[in-house]
Length: 249
Image 1: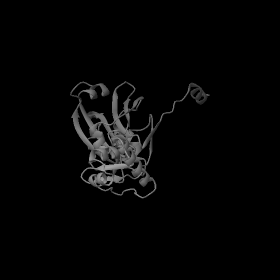
Image 2: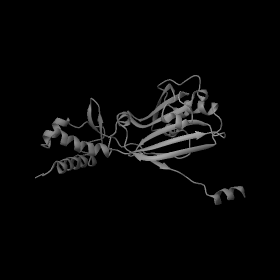
Image 3: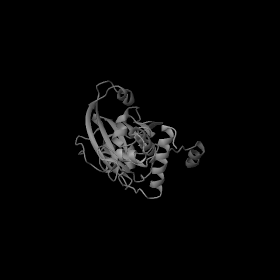
Image 4: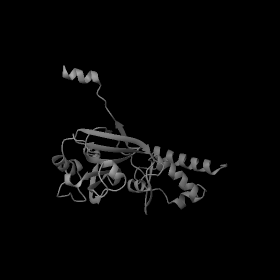
């Protein structure tokens, strides 16, 4: 006999997890409705949702608004390489992912003024980049560029290859990069991020804040990248003084 709500939702999540791992529930398959599952396990709908939340946090189940809960197909893991190209250029370089880009004219406010070291009201371009694996959102990046360094002809909203589109145009307009600073943290997603990426609010994300400056110290590009923890790793390489001296010799 099950004696507590906590143990009930654990039993349910364990049973569904086993069904997924053994193939009884297959990738892409829709689960019975929450009411049907609650009846099957003789629990309340809130208790059933707690069990599903565990599986959503593990990346095994995906809740699609208006459609129900589905067994999630395993996501392709990507590696974020520190100090490299604009974040979603790395995603676009992976054949398994497609990237949509939406551009917006805006004025610097709040955190953006500090991030780009500009005065409030300075004109910026925001590139909202959402990568997909199949029909499922994979990762999210917001890239900000001073308007005078942005292309005059902006890409269409559905452009699918950031690396061949926006990134190439930006590289042709901006001064050479002299410094790239990246701030990396693990945190829970905001409600907007959880909705956009269709992830559980309990699934940690890798958040990367990337700021690129030219030789004069002017910030010419800033990017905010959100990578769900169930599909991304990060690698940072440091060249030691011995290596540098070896190159000079």
